[in-house]
Image: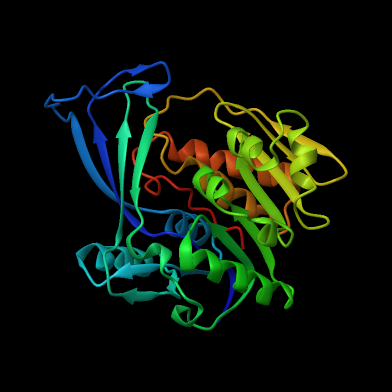
Length: 299
């Protein structure tokens, strides 16, 4: 089978912890030595690899997912979800623990995420089943998995495969991403990540564009402020709508998948931005990174 898109990223079990603790000076602070009651506790499947794979599949694209899970109950739940969402698992069940993320939600609907990577960062090229695809979508991985991403991008780019990349702040801080960036056709970052990557505070779009492939597209999101994109010729922007936010986890993955899906099926940049915004705003209206992803057949 030839895929429209294959995602290569993390697969984790998300644990949502709502203690109703208020933010103070940009911090969610838990007093030392106290026992804090949990207001609500929920479990879901997360990770950039599976979040975006589900988004692509629900938009009618033939989708594969490269990730790694442990031979444990959590790993089995991830594989069950991928099968249910009609996503081909192209990774491996391996020895070790499946990844976990603990999402600490604040009273103001923001969150801090504690992530245990587990086997996510231990994907070698030999773990990956053979496949053909038009697009490869990368989310953040470290260690052996990042090296496999770099090698796979190089191999696939020579075959004409398009590359989309959504690196996180911890990846930008720890690693030299130049090798991937120069082969990237769509780069999506939030404003803080863009500053971190370009080491600039002004002209972020132009500086971002200089890092990626010719005729690529650089995109910067900024929470509830305008989204900006640049293709080397023209700048584009879109203002998010004022909506009630229930939980923000997965909003970035949803936007990125929506935009890339639009480009895969030949939509304009403006149309793709609108689709990405619809996806992200749909997700943040509900709990969970996948529960309210759009179901629209683009093909």
